[in-house]
Figure 1 (tube, rainbow, N blue to C red):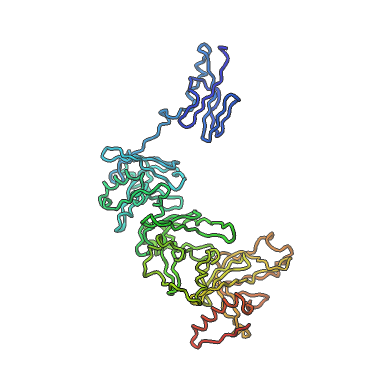
Figure 2 (spheres, rainbow, N blue to C red; figure 1 turned 90 degrees about the vertical axis):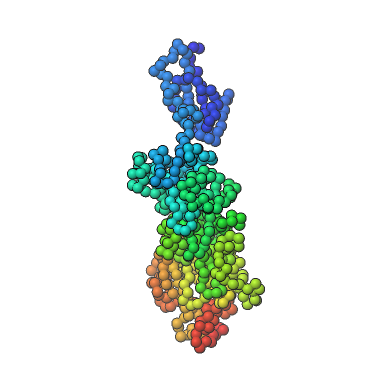
Length: 536
């Protein structure tokens, strides 16, 4: 009937309108959802955001001007209200910025910019991201600008973003500050990245016009989109020759891949820490992990080198000396063994003079080290092999057994150390009662009865994480806390039952043969040599 209302539905998905738009009066609010359904005559399902507007159509005689609120309907995509805002960049030179170069990019994730060169709008657009899939923070308004290289390598220059107030850039630029990344370091887009990608061709042309020395910089052909590692591009591992382009921020990542200049090799995949057992669990790199990968040559001609990560305050290579190595949770430096480096990757950046020489044929007496080098990292443990009494290793009190590798020359043997901070549970089995990590060392037993035999004591040298008693539900039910072993103070020996704890392995066991290496090394270093009993 003429006065009966007719209910219509307008469904809009992205740029497509499924039902024609009529001049309707709105009687309900619009809303968004992901799955949309109607009665049995009509059904629509979508995985994209959908706007619905419930409306009422009037006849010409019953229309009420005050009831018509079509102005509150969501504007359709493609209407002037939703047209994409064009953003233009006319200069990266802070001395030639124009008010039109001012942009507010707050809460945006991936932003296209049109580069204007000599009045011509270049294609393709220049795309900018903050970090990963995160959006630019609130108040990110200002200018993109180019900061020249501070070294002899012109490719160390960076595109940065200056956060300023609106107004004349000649006055507001100096009063502003550079945009920071979530980790607190300066947000930057290296020139190397601007010269390698398909979507940075237009920015490259503007940079070259305003900075002629960049014209001679080699432009590499664009890489396939599924292999675009410019943010993991490593050019040098020598601390004396690293540049700001080698600076990397890997905070919060489970793992990442690093490439070298050729982009042709297998990338070097790295992780922070992996747990024992199966499946492996990965730990994220801790906050503030930003700095440089570098090659560290071990002392002694037979020790393989390591690639470590030096944490620095910024991308300036001069901050390398003031930085500190990334540490594992046990307190030792994080590293990639030289034997694990890909020959056509990071290994190609190591000088041949720095590589430890290894014989092609391994003699029979050196087979122990060959097996050790081939073991998985989680089995080799994070401790370096111990070659002498007094050498520190990391000890975890949460576990009853700690794996320590003991070396003598080129040979390695496993030593399973069970520390004395334990009690017997209801099943008469040893159970750890403390949490914590410390640097410890083993020494020959000082007791007169142990002279000339395989017997060692354990000394606590430095606490890495506090040694604390486990929670009550992790301890034996009937445990009397008045009679539990107490951890020693820093610099003291471990005790058991009010006397020095001494470990005496049984003859011809794995631990006995491993500790033999330390006594042999001690005998080699002593002036008069020494004799060693073969039995306890």
